[in-house]
Structures are given as structure tokens and as C-alpha cells.
Length: 137
Image (cartoon, rainbow, N blue to C red; front, side, top):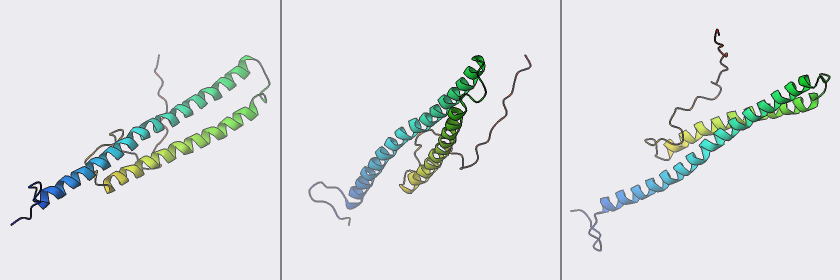
């Protein structure tokens, strides 16, 4: 005979299932909060890379348009080059964190749930530069 909680008439098995569901819901809520913070973080680093690229382009273009010597803006470009390297390194770190969080999600018992973007995370170091294709126009 199954043991019953005399106050509520719930069997011990039912009580454990409810407690497991509560814990799963708490973990799912926490995972969703992390996923909601991860996606903007990835987008922000890409935005920073793109805006820094535009700044580098603007400096190079402006120097030429102003007919200034090539040395003008060199220190600024060198500093921005270092900033770009740091941003690209940060982008890789965020990608590695994303992959690590995917493993953490599985370890937390949430393997059936998609968090953040639903595409697979590329393994670290697998991103490659693709040559730009130009139209024949």
C-alpha cells in the first residue's frame, strides 16, 4: 500500500513529482533569464566591431579627402586596430561562453529546451572568412 499524506491525500510519488516540476520550472526560468541576456550581449559585440570598422574607414577616407600626409591619423588607426583585436577576442570569448552555457543547460537537466537563438553553437575556432562575391554588373 502506498504511503499517503493524510492532510492532502497526495501519495509520496505525486509529491516528489510536483517538487521536481517546481525545481525544473525554477531552473527553466533561470535559464531563460540567462538566454535573454546572452543574445543582446552577442549582438552588442558585433555592433561594436561594425561601428569600430566604420570609424577606421572614416579616418582613412577623411585623410585622403583632406589631402593630408599618410602619417596623419596613424596613431589613431593603430589604437583602433588594437581595439579591434580586443573586440574580436571578446567576440570569441562570448561564443565560447555560449557553448559552455549550452553544456550547463544540459547539466541542469534542461536538455529538451532551446535557450537563446535556436541554432547550434559553432565549435570554438571554426569561424572562417568568406570571400566577398561581386556581381558581374
